[in-house]
Image 1 (cartoon, rainbow, N blue to C red):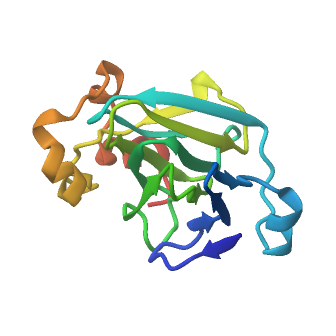
Image 2: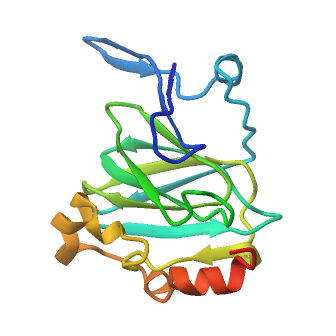
Image 3: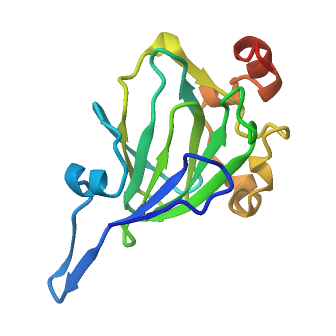
Length: 191
């Protein structure tokens, strides 16, 4: 497994497992705690989630506040999605910045988003199966949602979103989420 940390935001990691292919198909080891520990990746996971999304479905921007903050190790099992991590750590020099990774089932690549980041993804194909491991359990009272199309965050400038803008499917809950400005006012007293 290879870890890639070439992001402009500290803490983000892309993982690329080895893929073994032959005429029967392919095999990939998607998680091995000992292998990851040997590479310096020491996060523990307590909950797995999975969703199936149609092309154009945008899920997020989601996170949980302390003490239920979650790190997430995400991957696409089938199909493809662009995955977004938004730095919402109050004292971070990259607060409000985001990075993205194209995840494809056939690539088996994964993206680690640490605690303190908002997370979102856009499904690029029908029946995209998206899976993620979480470092903490879901807690409804700690849930925070930010508007996917808030200009202050700028995901709408992403090429994938610009190209799919008219066909993006967003839940009512995500449409009603708070702006980055509201998030700062409510959750970032140190800024």
